[in-house]
Every structure is written in C-alpha cells, then in structure tokens.
Amino acid sequence: MLLKKSALTLALLFTTLSTFAASPEGVWKTIDDATGEARSYVTISTNDNGSFSGKISKILDPAKQESVCVKCEGERKGQKIEGMTILWGMEKQGNKYDDGKIIDPESGKIYSANMKLLENGNKLEVRGYIGFSLIGRSQTWERVEQ
Image (cartoon, rainbow, N blue to C red; front, side, top):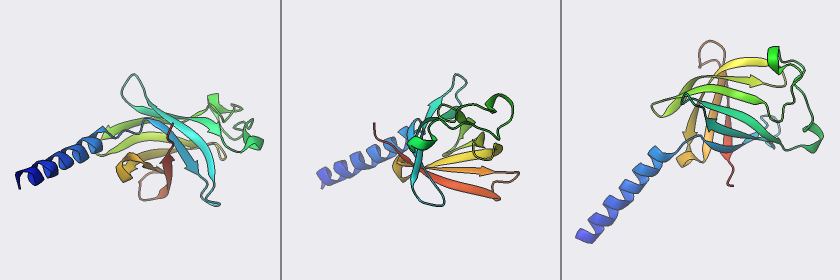
C-alpha cells in the first residue's frame, strides 16, 4: 500500500513539474488554415527583458523561401520573410503569454497577440486580434522535435 502511494505521489510530482517546466521556447511548425499543410518553422526564444519573440526560421515551400514582405510597413517592408521576427513582446501571465504582437507577412498587418501551451507543451495556440481577444483568429502550432 505504501509503495502504491509513493508511486502515485512521484507520478503527480513529475506531472506537476513538467507542466511548470513547459515553455514556448523552441521550434514550432505553423499550419496553413486553408489547406492544413505545414507552412513554416518559427523559432521562439526569450529576450533579455524576459519576453518572448518568434522568428520564421524556415519556409517549407522551396518556391516561397525567397519571398519578401511586400505589404509590410517600416523596417519590415521588402524584408525577406524567412528570418523575419513575426512575433514579439509576449510576456508570461499565469498559464498563458500575453501583451504581444504578431504580423501577418502576407497582408503586412500587425495584430495584438497572445498564446497558450496545450497538450503538455507539444502544441501552442497563437491568437491574433484587433481590440479584444474575442474578435480574432487562432492557430495551433506543433512543436518540432530537434
């Protein structure tokens, strides 16, 4: 009986620790909303100020790897999309990340954004919105094992 309780306690402890240890840092595969096909890899990292940002590290369609952001404004206008920082300013707030921005390189539009880890850190729900987070669009990215 004592052995069963000890095993259960250890299992709960490791589950709790893995939940707290989950981080959005790493490489994520983005999925096209329309086709369901993988589009790119985004590498998310922590900045010096503790916030998170994400950069397109690879465009998976070889025909689009040299694409530039035609509709972007400012420093991103004409910038190559592969290598572009598309997500920035995400700050951990409880079990989600908020107060960030995300750019859609196809439209050049910048949206407010938040994100949340799902499935023990194997998926990341990224939501872009204007004004209130209720009015927006979410994508689920999949963690890439490296």
